[in-house]
Image 1 (cartoon, rainbow, N blue to C red):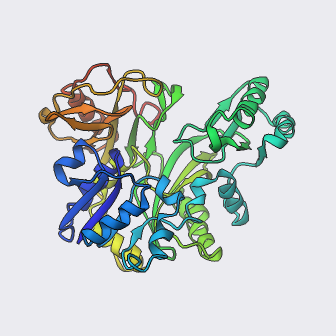
Image 2: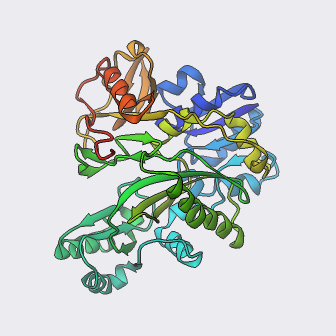
Length: 424
């Protein structure tokens, strides 16, 4: 098979690594890819949201399958674009339909879906610029902290958690009236705050059947001890040590099955990943959010643990025969540590040469924000590299990642030294 993977981050490098392990993957193209995918696959330089260029390329290269990494093409309807075009509708797209992608594309759509299908989640209401003062009054009915979520896509940065009521009102006005997150915050969901411990649950579904992938926990804040600004993610651990058999059964029964059944009941076509952000409150799983693709950096710990043939799994998704294949998981722990540019998630420089990758031993290095310039690998984003390691437990795996990070260098390089700090 010739496969086209859309995206350019650490998630896409990890997916490439896994797809290429399959004997069925003869050729892999990545659009636009990064310096890591350039080594193992063929990068092609068009945007994952440029559907016409994708179509032309799919026809020219006789692509057999399109795998979608990031959320933007899904929310913009790439699945429907292929389905409704006679020239390319024979090519399976791994990812949900446009309406299915609204589970991530609209916080309000997701909350309505959760309530409708009786899936446990926090109480909420949503507001626009016309109802901003009503929103301020709603805040007065809640206990702090206050959770404000931009309704649309804001690259993982559209959620504010504030302790002060007046500050929450000010930020609500900033989001709705002053477009703090652009059009993403033209509507804002205000949610009750849930106190508990978070984890991510990943599901692969063909719209009818599903497979539970390994759990993971990522660390969003830039600073140690989970302080400072939110980022795309600074590291991840899989499996989550506290996710025992009882909790996993609760998650599957109360969240995963009703989600897949809800998609069917609502007539929503969905062939791809569901990433469910959960918070465990007094032993009970509650949904914080849905994403309609794999997380990053969670992909960098989940994919290496999957021992089954990923192409075979994706073919089963496309043919709605996911119940016919088995999912084998490596029992070992995997951890990944993100190495980022100094200044991230705010202003940071690009173009710094990265050295030492060839010295890494017994760990996987997934490229995120990198490119090749004049034959050298240089930084090209905020999150630059993810260093993934295996161990008999997550402490052992983390130690290995840190030992290998010591061999890497680029100007103003930064990473958190406490990933996994909150896990026993």
